[in-house]
Image (cartoon, rainbow, N blue to C red; front, side):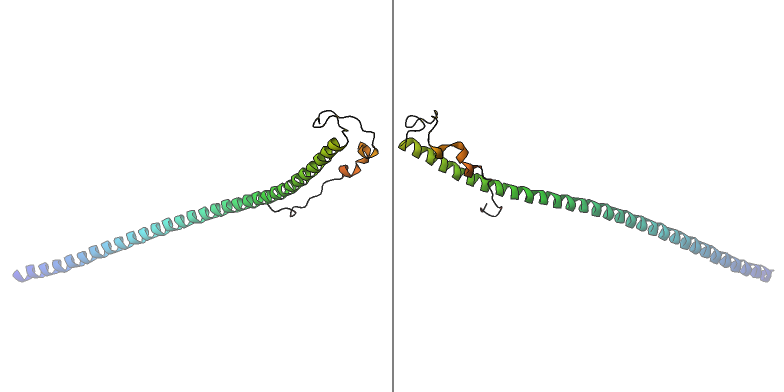
Length: 154
């Protein structure tokens, strides 16, 4: 009997060790499946993050192009205004010079002929009899003022 119980006991150890191996294999397979699933989820998160970053890059590139376009338009407007401003400065200088010349002529006429009334009195204007003072003879005063943008430095 001892031998038969020893035999059955040996068989049961073999069965136990076989079932332990099966249990270990099942755990190993379960862990492997779990690891694969975890890796798949990680790859999906990584892909989603990459897609989000690519969308952000596209949006920022679009914004950057709009800003560059706006900057170019603003720069062009600035250059146009600067050119107009330069022309206006030249015209102011020319008109100032012409006004000074006309004031000198008026002063000369007041001092020499007394045509415009009493000396120093410029508010009253007496009609002159001289042909060169006729307003119709001032055709040179009606000439347009021409100035180039590069005529005067800013």
